[in-house]
Image (cartoon, rainbow, N blue to C red; front, side, top):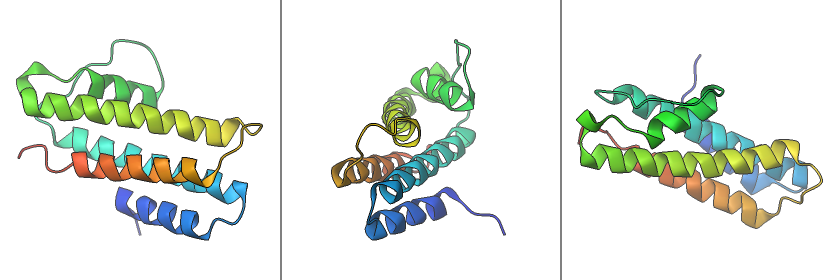
Length: 131
């Protein structure tokens, strides 16, 4: 059985609601990011033309680069949405990296809620790109 981005989003919310320690909050942040990442990948796949990544980087960074530099043939509305998604995804990635790797930094409930809100915004922005 395969899952979708919305399943990861539900898991992030469930983890956040049940989080009774910092490790659980960190896990919820990570799941929220991956929900947003996979939703952005799906949205990008629906576009008539993909943007271009101009710098070397990993899969996540290159997706953000492509969303930051949408193809002009997609039109102004899609380009604006694409750039907004790039900004949101970059913020979420930075938060996820901090949660997963910067163990000396405290992760509080407010940080978790900000990540969940950013994920909500990603899903809202990723409405059908053809409309």
